[in-house]
Length: 227
Image 1 (tube, rainbow, N blue to C red):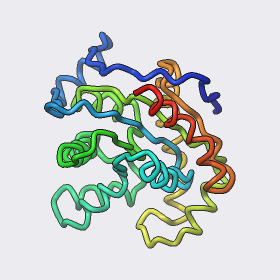
Image 2: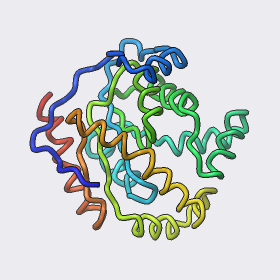
Image 3: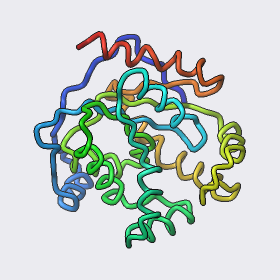
């Protein structure tokens, strides 16, 4: 699934519109709403399958353009190490290749945003499902300004994950294949949603780190130029 990067970047205004679909109303009832106080953050969702290289690119984006990098996966793993009740649940969920409940991940992301002095955030690896997306927008009270999707062939992602040898509980052949199946089934509708809203920028995630970053750079350079 490929989408062309739009030639002109339109920065989106903050949105608090409630959709009429019953599924969204139900989600609103479940999660309620919140806000980040006086902050008006510029938020970028960074999506892509495991091993697509989005984390590496986030580090370069953060350094080059001054964003705060919030990795959903890192926040979840940190919670696991805290030995909290949520941490135990998160560990079991990840081992099984399933999606961690939305409210748990959004709570961790929101906390980091509130504690940060920065107003520009890269939210890496979230949302992974439509339910994630709806929960985030309702709890945070805003949509992302832009969305990056790192499009990478499945065989390349499998090879990268197995070669990175970071000792993560989910870096094994069985779990990575399950994670890719989950990603294909659940994340692509999110990508399609933001594509229709004109917020999606698809990056060809095959090549060297620098080659891939040269596709990313114009997206954020355009944002800087619009200030």
